[in-house]
Image 1 (cartoon, helix red, strand yellow):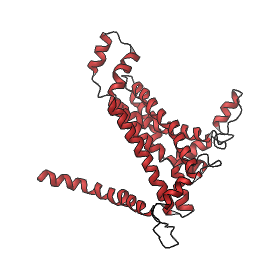
Image 2 (cartoon, rainbow, N blue to C red):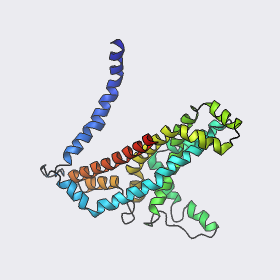
Image 3 (cartoon, rainbow, N blue to C red):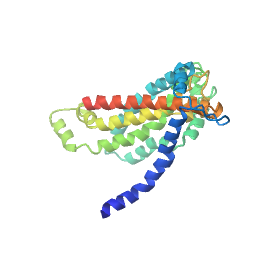
Length: 282
């Protein structure tokens, strides 16, 4: 009884914070999704009309396509590349802690600062195009071409997320028993065979976790789209979350925006359950 009371006492502040700032607004948004609330006019219950309008809206489907495109560009890279980075910094080398700090540093930088930094480099006369000109390559319209803008934003996300997800894999690597690697070496396994046969299977729960977290992060990414390109050019970087922002705070159509947000929630939930089912089957 004594331990239970203290456990609940420690959980209460975090639970209250979660209730007030997460669950409460989520429930309020769900209620608003069934109304025509737009701040200036009286709230009117409209049932599933907002959801029906969203499903008929070409802007929503374009934003959904952009979101999936961005997810495909970002998540596989953030699931695979940090594994190799974690393997490298898990070696017993001199100064390896400094390398871990260097690789993790981008995760400490604010997304807004990162956006301005890469925006300067992506400029038509920026650093990247300067180096391309040295090797005789024509300047790339990184943020002004509707075909290149999304890969450019994905590069920024991968650069900032590599070190963050590296830490999860590094923690998983340090929990793998050394006896397994020693036994594999006795059987003649080389560097890559050891990691393919031992490291990757042992890291499967961590891989699932990183896949889920990076998927949710990709589907809710908004800051880069706002600060670097404002959803452009021609809506090529308008994701679903940016569409929610535009409808809610520019068009003041809160009910419609809430319906869009819950459709996005349904998509993320479906992808998460699909990933979990795939992992459980394996």
